[in-house]
Image (cartoon, rainbow, N blue to C red; front, side, top):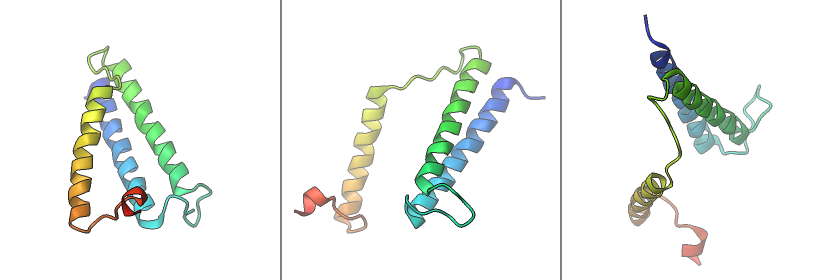
Length: 105
């Protein structure tokens, strides 16, 4: 039998995979596309999945009795953005990602 913390860790992983799936659909088909049989754009569906993910983060914190406490860390986020920007610049230097409009003018 699993603990509530384990249960919400599983749910967190499920939601993270759903975020990944819709993010890939946004990349393939565009954020404005409405998939046949859907009423929402890919962007709207992505927002919903992100909210689902954050809900599980919240529930995990409650179920763990504070052992798993998440608070946004602006410093850690800035470090991650800087790291991703370095890889972006490298990909652009290889001609694999377009340059932004400001760099092209």
